Amino acid sequence: MTRDLLLKIELLSDPKWLYVVRGAVERLAETVGFPAAECRSVVRAVDEALTNVMRHCYCGRLDQPIELSFRRLGSHSKAGKKGLEILLCDRGPAVDKSKLRPQTSSELRPGGLGLQFIREAMDSIGYKRVGHTNLLRLVKYLPSEKP
Image 1 (cartoon, rainbow, N blue to C red):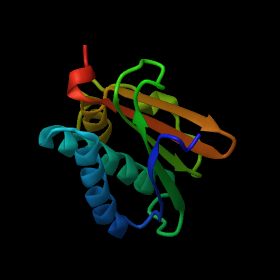
Image 2 (image 1 turned 135 degrees about the vertical axis):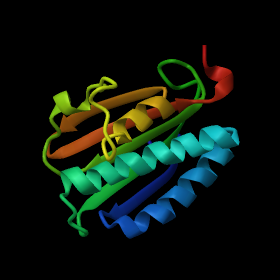
Image 3 (image 1 turned 90 degrees about the vertical axis):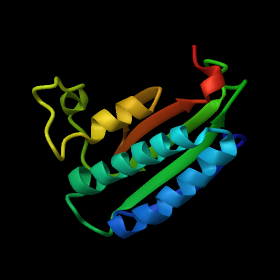
Image 4 (image 1 turned 180 degrees about the horizontal axis):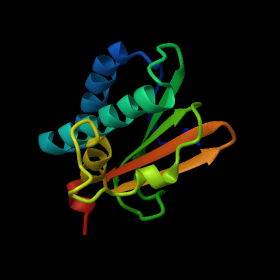
């Protein structure tokens, strides 16, 4: 299970840690082989996802646990493509899946663009609830692996 694990970060839901996570994610994405523009996209997606957890799941509480796991995708992945899988776990209340749907242009508003940024940046997004844990799975394939 940890064979392809590149990095695991455990943090509290305090926004002061976002700066540290952004730096780590950017270096990791570079190391995996993403070009600079794609590194920025991955960083932005992770930052938006963490911000959403802190704001909406934990309602601004600064002491709640969040875990991030980063795995290399390669020949062992279902699609066989190379890239990066990011798993974000929190113990907040279950997320209403209807709120995760894509918004129309008339629904877009300032402060509500985070999910749109995540969708644009990542190649695959999945959400599920397991027990008392929310799991958000983000996948980004290397440019040479995209159709």
